[in-house]
Amino acid sequence: MDNPLPRPRRPVVLIASCALILLATALLLPRAPAVPPLTPAIRLDPRVARRSGNEVLWQLPPGPPRAAMFVAPGCTIRATDFFDASPGCPRCAGLPEERRFTREALRRGYAVLAVSSRAECWSLDPASASGDGSELAAVSSIIEWWVKEQHPELGGLPLVGIGASSGGYFVSALAARVRFSSVAIVIAEGVFAAMEEIPPGYPPALFVHMPRDAKRAQMVAASIGKLKSTHVDVREIQCDAFAVSAEFLAARIPGLTPTVADGLVDVLRQKSFLDEKGFLKNDGRSTPWKEAAEEAKILPEGFRLERHVTEELNIAYAYHEFTSLQNEEIFKWFDSHMDHKI
Image 1 (tube, helix red, strand yellow):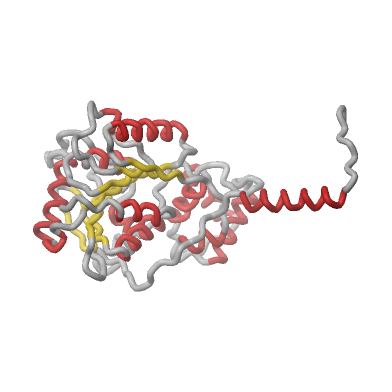
Image 2: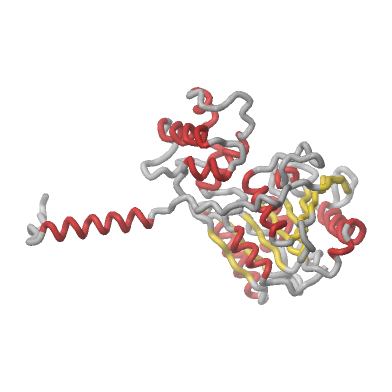
């Protein structure tokens, strides 16, 4: 070395100090968030209908409802992904993040209305090629039908809205015509850049995003600035990456055994899909984990949880995915903005 350090007089103390620093550093590394327990008493079993070309699913909480919630899924995600398969909805898929969010909403006394977009993604066009009218007008009508005709007991309660990705854009636009108490816009910056001005009475808005997507983070910051300039109450939640663990996968995905979860994480390591700290090198969508797992023969026959595993890998990579890991903060936001009623 060109500039050697002076020899320490107390090597034992130095070694002990280094050990403490290493321990502290290890404790500060991001880890998979603690997995909150689900409430076993709440069984997902929605009612299903079709209105104005949109698939509509809903379920009321086990006790008297204290609020109502509209959910707009992202591209390729359906309302059926927010509920488990049941007698009332055998096609429901129960994706891990969506089903956890729905169960938490029901546990907290929210009546949940989830609507699928007509196409793969939501349309903000004033008219539809199918002749059913705009989706914004259709969903406004669906919410009114749900409250007035299906469940009049919801009248007079607060209404909140949440949408992810394409659904986030949709909810941000819908909030200009539907009286929400507050909205949550997930992994999207909303349509505020296209608005000449924020409509009077626009509801409080929570942005839940993943700053690893740096371009979107900049657009979210611009949306927050525009809303604040018109005195709309705004907050953001940032979701960071964490190391993948078998415990996390097994706890989040119903039907995924600890043995299979261990095998999946082993394959991720062996194929160098993880870095030295256990973080994914790429998004779950672009990681060929299933092919590697099939090659290693760790997946059981008839394995049908590919979408579920990919979703949790996306959460760990933290670039673009709906997440229920921030449920506590999201519902605190909704609960603290209950002024507007349906």
